[in-house]
Length: 313
Ligand code: NAP
Ligand code: 8YV
Image 1 (cartoon, protein in one colour):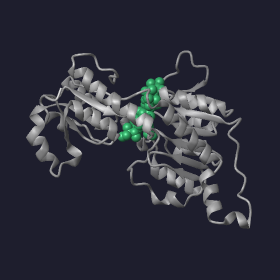
Image 2 (tube, helix red, strand yellow; image 1 turned 180 degrees about the horizontal axis):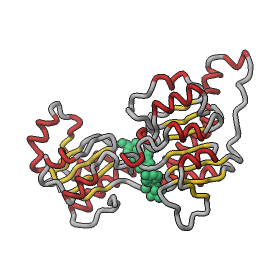
Image 3 (cartoon, protein in one colour; image 1 turned 90 degrees about the vertical axis):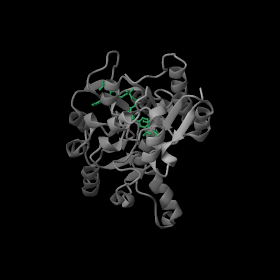
Image 4 (cartoon, protein in one colour; image 1 turned 120 degrees about the horizontal axis):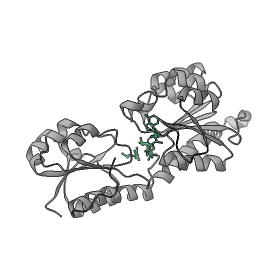
């Protein structure tokens, strides 16, 4: 299918990217010294886009590619794509759901454990020789605590399974209660935050969830509460988060994602009650390979005249 030309907006896991390149003619916008020049040169021939969540795939870009048929996203979150513009153009949009559930849930649970039990702090404590001067202060248990999940979807359910194995009780918030789910549903996020010990955000990003975890929600979670964000930086009001952690109205936070990543508010660096990760929840060899293969498989299926494997509804 080398005659099919694809515009790559960002690189993904190299061995999987190579598979895509074996099959298609791939133009790498992220390597272009003059991105606008590259689009002017090849735009009229481009039939597919491959995008990462951080890439802005908007109407302007789509309009510059008159033969565009499909946008294949690496990652499950498609908040970088203007879905309405894609719908109007009749474009197919695909993502890579399911294959990353377990890894993202592992990191979410790891962050929860590391934050509640102050594992990163303990590590720094030993390395700094502080143990010689006295023991680390006690932390809290995971078992018996309530975890509120904001976004009880594919990954949310994988997180719940792990948290239950740690003896935690699960409650959830979404836009509606789910049939066949026995956990308590909260229509109101602030109410759920008030009732739980740990609030895990794992809902989609984008305008609908922007700052859904606001100052009020953090106050409700309270001085003993822990916020875990593995969703998108945009979901949490970061300024309010820094304020709540500084004045102690929120107890602790474990964060994999940030509003202006890779920029992280420096105020968080000095906080012992915070664990920071550089957006790595799905970043294992196995999972990134599976995501990359699925990204290429969706393109292959479409250009072979078959239905794509994982279309975004
Ligand atoms: P999913 O299966 O579609 O689940 C999303 C959940 O969020 C659903 O339960 C949905 O429930 C809920 N939701 C959607 N819109 C909402 C809103 N406006 N308010 C409250 N809840 C809402 O998606 P998934 O595969 O689990 O992935 C979830 C998200 O995780 C992705 O979109 C991505 O942003 C993030 N993610 C992050 C990483 C990372 O590296 N940190 C990795 C993978 C995914 P209702 O429809 O009932 O509202
Ligand atoms: C990746 C993600 O970090 O799937 C998502 O939505 O955020 C992560 O799996 C991302 O796709 C890499 O750009």
